Length: 204
Image 1 (cartoon, helix red, strand yellow):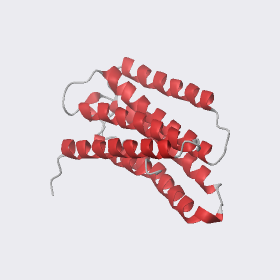
Image 2: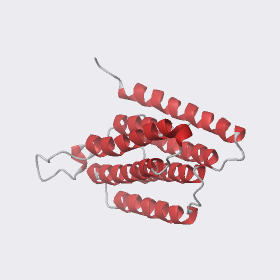
Image 3: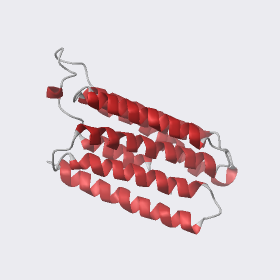
Image 4: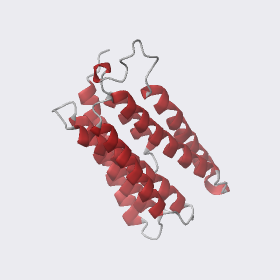
């Protein structure tokens, strides 16, 4: 069966926006809890970054916007991680996460400034999201409260699966020629990144 990737990307973007709206409602209904507001912020940043990514299928987008969109997805994942830590009562280190995000942004901008090399952008993107997913999964595993142990274990498995799935889906296969770093190799398809982000955002 043939699937139109642009239609699928738009549908997944809509799901991300609806999920962000749901998390905003959750944050407003639980103002006394620190976590939900960071989940909503993270999902919002992540969704906006993926919307920019989808624009590449509609019109020509400057490489700098590619870099910004990838950095926004990484920033959204960092905010989700911070939200999970705050939800479970951890102090969190927002300044440290901000510094990490700035490094991610700088790395993406440096890649954009050297030309269009999609495999390297895929590697950086997948490594950032996979590490964030694994960190979130590890934080869930540390939580052993009996009242919602099953839910926490399920979410940990989801994020661990996400951390393994993304590198397998987007890292370049064995190159057939020495020109695998050139733009002729093609740019990353949005379907894998969109699908994994739809999976990774299920915190509510």
